[in-house]
Image 1 (cartoon, rainbow, N blue to C red):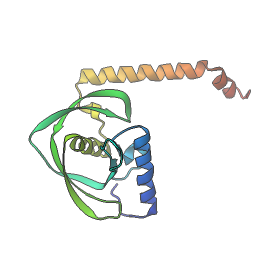
Image 2: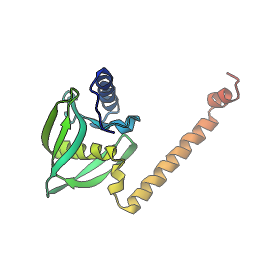
Image 3: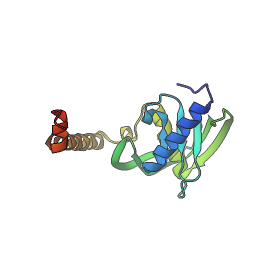
Image 4: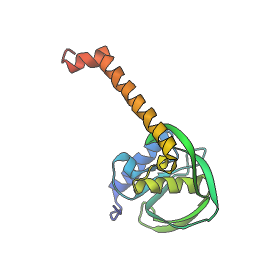
Length: 167
């Protein structure tokens, strides 16, 4: 959903998303990843994590024909990294947190990150770019990890006593 109100709530959401991204640690986060269904992305690809960029209602308006393969990972799919081919340069148009329009040309990691995060706004996760075989391996791994977590919770003395109301 496009952002139409540029108020203190939006500024707080941007700050909270930035903190979540830095704590992860990650270089980008889309609002949809924190259950906010608006067109908002925060990115910081700097080594010092001090160059936060905010993209509201972003749209890619140009991509290069030249492609680059980057190993991508995602906070939505923890522990999974794989090469994804994307345009090596992009130009994006967006609004800042005050509602001012801007355009930005990007290459390298920033270009990859912009494309990756804007995909989230469309409901796309980077693993969808991988081969069916790789996607199935990732799915199997994640299901196995989930089963192990559930088994651990069931076998934990404190969690089982809490479930029975014996705490």
